[in-house]
Image (cartoon, rainbow, N blue to C red):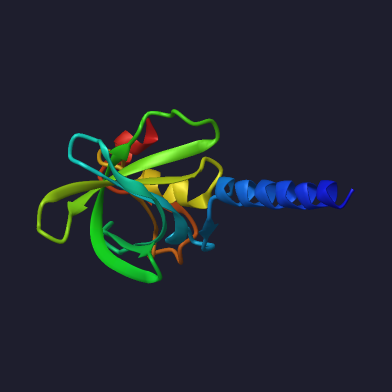
Length: 157
């Protein structure tokens, strides 16, 4: 009987550990400009380099993304540019692709994976190339949104 309880305890610990690996870290600030998600480095051809890591992202004023990746109790910080969005392969997940350079100066990409319902998704969608950027109007105290990059006649249609 003692052996059965020992096996049950080991099975329960293994199940809890498995659940821990399934849960991805995710946090977003109220404005959506700072968030925590999973990131994986990719080659220029899109082949994975390494595994998924906890990644902190700060969206800069000019659309540049400051990335801090956690690896073995230390963090590496670098600057990236949003390149596009990967085709949806996972249900309820969104993956955005960033372009940057590694430590040796070679071109490299980074995939950011987050829940589709995240506030950070809206922020990143506004930064996608070819998407008109939206900002608060300062002339009227910020009471409405204005679309930049289009004329008033284009915005009305």
